[in-house]
Image (cartoon, rainbow, N blue to C red; front, side, top):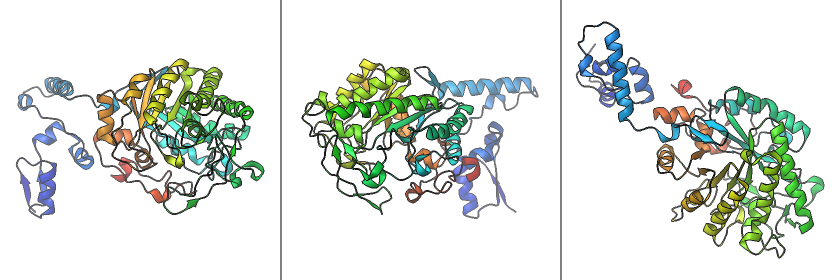
Length: 444
């Protein structure tokens, strides 16, 4: 049996064992300053500095504890705060950190009704004072375009959401429901009576490779909404927001991004209307702002957010001047005093792929007066940077939060992350790829 000692840290201690130069490694000063040293090494967590001044003092307890406390205080003052883990006041909501669960479509709400297994999924990702956004939820029976996505237009759906929301609240989380209408990103099989999907246009959408990289989605050519039909769609959003509050949600996020119905009105690549909802930038944004106004009037502006992706070209929904579109929306939203604006980074031109891009959300961040959320390919380092440099108030994480239900804790400890598995993103299994990603303690 060979033991070695003398200035070893985590890295060279591991190396000594790996190269068979020792059976055990002896730690002194490190173990003194870190009584949980094996655990810290296991998680690759930061270690406390030792204080030579208190190595040999004679007091068995009081003075030692006092000095250790002073040492910790000194260290805390020397170490810059971890920006993502600083508290933030979002309107009436006191958040304990700035890491937000993204609205992730999971396709496990059978027959468009939220299921009991969602209780565990959201509960796993809830922290006290944490902010979560539920997956995109249909506002009506014409809003659907994917299998088994949840809705909130029937009493049964509202009741099914209640225990899910209650569990998030029981753990101290703040929970918003994202509400959407897919527009032309649908086909007749998802529509009542096999009718055509509705949109701002009658331009058909080409078949698209689904996010799993295997299946091809095919779309029925849409029917252009008549001008007199648009108020009914606005009303569907208003009622859905009211239903979300009845289900217990703290607020709603309007899904105005990624090529779905609201985006189909805003983007000039899609919108070819000649009425008051088409043509000029102001006209193309009218539908989105009417929905914002209706919902703010229904449930209160302090409970309303919106997600926008002016730079994205998802589902053939690009715009010739995305900077102008994003800036116009940011400035216009101020008139309604809504709680937050959630924007997708320009580098995410399509869902799931990061591109080099010269554009920035900074002008929109400066223009919008409420809380500003950013999403799109963020990791620990650039999430911290976004907060530290005041480019955002909150950072939204999707795939990383899916694969790491304890993501705030892992970020805090700078612990390794589980890898996500694209192949199980949209399977209908209530466990696999949904609630089976391990926590740090389980992994350890």
